[in-house]
Length: 338
Image (cartoon, rainbow, N blue to C red):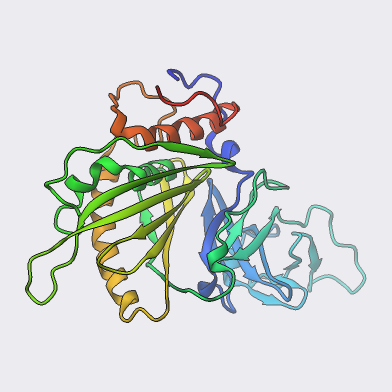
């Protein structure tokens, strides 16, 4: 792939996918603002779930994030205009009872749902693909711990690529878990899945120093599973420590800015896991952020022009091929890397 000719606009390319806009725990009695694919949204709780509409009132442009959810819908704080979750205005208090509500008194509304502790929104009438399938989170047997929201000045695709980049571990993550002695990346395969990718490597990570003892090498199996366009599930199976799974979902605010919803699942009997995870993972991700925000172009490239790749880059390359296919309207399951 060597040209971006024919690529659809960035928002159009990804509008028909589900993207998270909030952790469920954030959305309480007050509405929340969100920005998704250059669209400003307001998200609120209804009697039956969650709703998402355009952020500004159709009357005088007031910010509906300052409004209040009521039985009828979302009430604007400026003049009390109230909108149902389908975006139609259902009440204008300043009008006489029974007066017709103007047809244009409506907001753009979008499908919204909750799953895995996240509020998801699709900017199209109907989603082109389902939500990720993470059955281990469905029965409540695992504990979860979120990181604070990650707002990076990079494209969502750039963020996903650095998560998938197996060749950077020993360089960027020196001092956290990277092993500077392991510079060569053994050959690995990338498997295409319906709507995504899968790869597995074994990495000799350096375990944390405990009690003043030097770090120990821990051969960790890393299993990467991508759900297109911007979601990664990364399963860690160490030999010295406990198994856990990380979920990184990059939500595209715009083509060059993303907000990542990042959390982990683990067995609830593991003591102190949450505190250790948050501390160590924030340090690791800060190392990634400094690299990712310095990459150019900031937008996720559609091709490989201007870059030189080797087989160690196979997973991020195959991921970029898949995302570029979505932008260009081509089948995702095209030819693999030779």
